[in-house]
Amino acid sequence: MNSEYFINSLLNYLEDKLPAELFLEVQNYITNDTIDGAEKMTQAERVYNHLKEHGFITNMQCHLLYGIRHCPSVIRDIKKKLLYEGSLFYIDTEPQKGCDRYGNKVNWVKYLLKEKSLCVNLQ
Image (cartoon, rainbow, N blue to C red):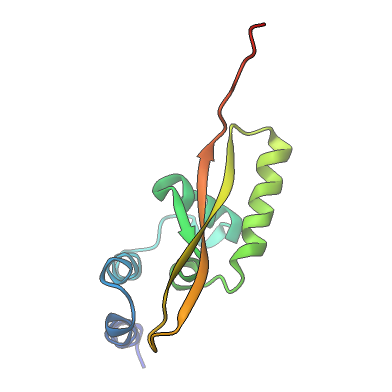
């Protein structure tokens, strides 16, 4: 099986399974050439770059776009690095609710990259 056939089969399968917006993002990512040096990045670097570009990421996006099976551990590593470096950014979580393909209620988390607000007390 060649890679083009595999990619087309994967996209055909995912088209009916994913919301349209997420499918287009996955399709765009899969069909474009890999970014130079991306294969040398760590999982944390890939996710952090995604957060900087898009502002948020979900567990499903981590899995589908980057092959990451456990997003929370990667997010934890990024949080530690941001804290250690004294970054002006932090990662926040936003609970999400929805339904799975069977109509069951499900919950998940959206991870958001936010800028720390600097408050100065002038008194």
